[in-house]
Length: 473
Image 1 (cartoon, rainbow, N blue to C red):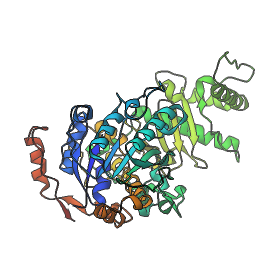
Image 2 (cartoon, one colour):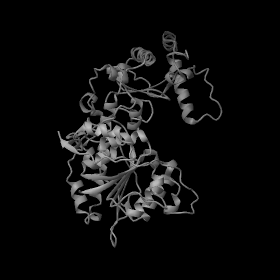
Image 3 (tube, rainbow, N blue to C red):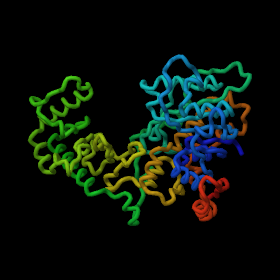
Image 4 (tube, one colour):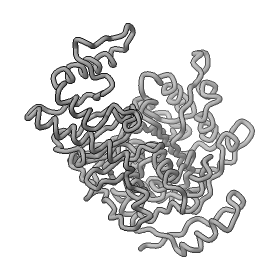
């Protein structure tokens, strides 16, 4: 065993996949969502315990000793009194429970993940409180955020065609008695894995790759509804028609709001309208004024203002597909804020709600398997027989395996001077392959049916299956 890790807020095991690929062994996992915990058990042979607030607090510590602590924790508002510091400052939040685990066991490495906004101006207080707490606990950590997306990482290093910016906090324990160390380091250096790669070079058919779907049940999972096809056909007609009308002029890149299409003479801006919205309203009015006749004809042709056929969110459209000729050759994302079209290279971030991207050329949405591939999970990863919507949600809540893998390797390289007394951990991570796919793709279950039978035969939470056994395929 090269190193032991704990996986907090584990989801379905994105962190687990990365750390197992680096040679680690999971000794504890926590996940409050029961469906996700079942998937985790099915694939990793470890049943996550439940609510971390009950497992790690002032009175209880069920998390065992470990070398590496990882977790994608939800971020709650912290106290802003300005009178408290460190552990007291984050009390009552889930980060406080993480801090209690760190305080109890002082793992060599802590790697935390969160949405990019945690490092934004609206959450500067929370960010500073986290960094301050980790330093109080005896860790070297940068106060600058490390923000990375899988689409920025070269495919040779486990990158994926998904834009999914996340912030990572990489903290390494300062050995007892150390006197000379830099506690204000730079973030881990990921330039190696981003070098010589242009994110515009992604091709889903090659790099994902896309599935060939033949079974009726799988087709039913990804097929578009009649309403979705109607909306796409209407906006496709808009794209083709406007391309002919505008010739060499690019299609507008700002959001188009059909409900706000009035001429410049008719435009009225209410007092107090936010500046950003006023800008969009004026741009839409300019666009409509210039092309009123052709736009009115398009609206009538597709009955776009009919609430029954076109809900409000489908009367909004955002073109980010550059020189694509039609809408059907783009990647589309149906959002509450409208239909967004992007060039068919990398896809928008998977999200934990039903906004699965649509692959125009295939006239279907991404499959669960393709979603798993976007997160770096291997093709043997099993979602059991749960509803498709549940699997999409779990993927949207997950972390990208390749990003975690490379961030942890870069963290170890940054902090080699602090890890000299951890030779097995250091050796395992430094000598791991460049690409986690080289490890994960060659693993599979031994006696898979035995595990599957056991999963449904025992009462979850009462019995832990033996650590998952792997074989080289």
